[in-house]
Amino acid sequence: MNKEIPKEYLRFNIIERIQHIILFTTFLLLAFTGWALKYPEVEYSQGWIRIWGGPETAGLIHRIAGIIMLLDFIWHVIYMTYRIVSGRIRFHEYTTLIPLPKDLTDLVKNLLYFMGASREKPQFGRFSYLHKFDYWAVFWGMAIIGLSGLFLTFPVQASYLFPTWSLNWIWELIFIMHSDEALLAVVFILFFHFYNEHLRWEQFPMNMVWITGRLPIEKMKHEHPLEYELEFGDKKEGDK
Image 1 (cartoon, rainbow, N blue to C red):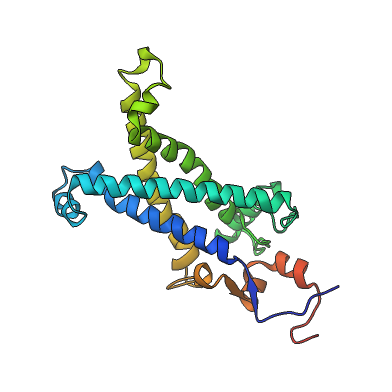
Image 2 (image 1 turned 180 degrees about the vertical axis):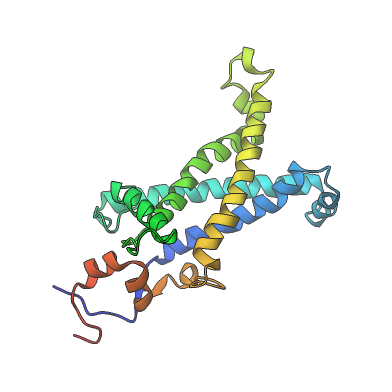
């Protein structure tokens, strides 16, 4: 049976919004403190470090923010697992976060459309290929940055995990993995995530869905037509 069409559609519930707020808050703290610690030779870094109370305090803030981010990530994984196991999330090709062959064809269609080689725009469900790439990139980042960060935070405990013959070079490798992957994450968030979610003309100056969790129904029809069709079918707005 078709549903009555509301004025707004709940895209993210309160738990998902809280998880996102914790994630981006800790990410910003990590970026601001980590940047100056990574490049202390840069002139302005010394002043930036002083804002955080000196290198020791900046390092402490960095480690605390990193642990909170990891706990938030673990909470999210447990939460999503619970929703799947309990049946609150059911697989459907128009609503899943799992990458599908359709995402590849959507990418090709989008490229052809933007290059003027095609007039056909891809039709997206709840998550486009950009959303999925954005989401799963966090898992890759947590695996590299999170684990290496834990090793650097607890070096004595971590040293028991490495063979003796690797101790001359393993810590330098871990530092490079943590530092360079973090730099990649900062660039990715600034140029990919911020643009697609907030700075595009349709979203500028900010997409408020991360605060309200709700998407205007007209915007849903435009940006997620397959999900709209799945949820409301041929129901007309105002119908009961």
